[in-house]
Length: 79
Picture (cartoon, rainbow, N blue to C red):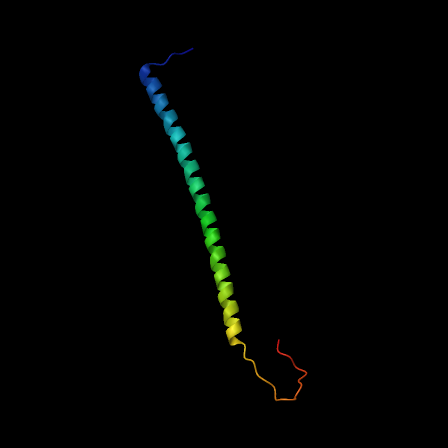
């Protein structure tokens, strides 16, 4: 079995630690992206709900109620 000098062991330890830090960095980026994606989905859901509420309020304001003449019965109803 080959024995390595101290310099080679230091070099191998440096490479191993760089690899470990690279893996940890990739994991941190993945977690951050998942968190941002989740936050974006929540924001989109809130905006969608606000838009639906605004559209419902606009529809209520656009309804025009027309009274029929007294005593008249109409067979047509508003949709």
